[in-house]
Image: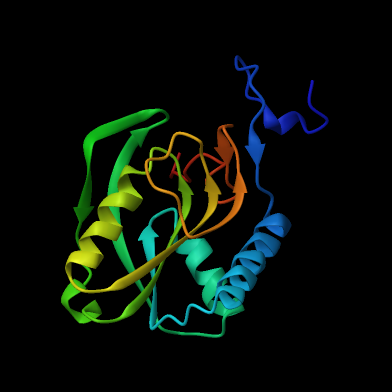
Length: 169
């Protein structure tokens, strides 16, 4: 049994990768250090919403920039359930405005990699120079991010999605 009992869920015996808030802060700063060390000078940070919103925000603070945007993409429809293909949702990012720009694309995890691959391709087709950063990379991915904090095959529990949604009940 894990020393951190929240790493498993009742009825599930697999160990989970659990990211705590304080670890998240350090993970974002480590990604920022990797980006700076690489010499990549971006014009804008683009978050893949929803999962990439918090990491992108934390990285933007660590790198002292307010040049941020987001792109809404849906692929996972439930735990372990996906749509046939990732789908861009409104409100839409003005991708034409990224033509010729250096984009730092941020998401929380690259699992299958299909979402990241689709967005990188879409931005590159618009003439953007894209580098990607994720907190986690899974071994099942079809695309590797340029910057990654940790690699794992485990199911990941993020601090912002570990609790059920708040309802009026």
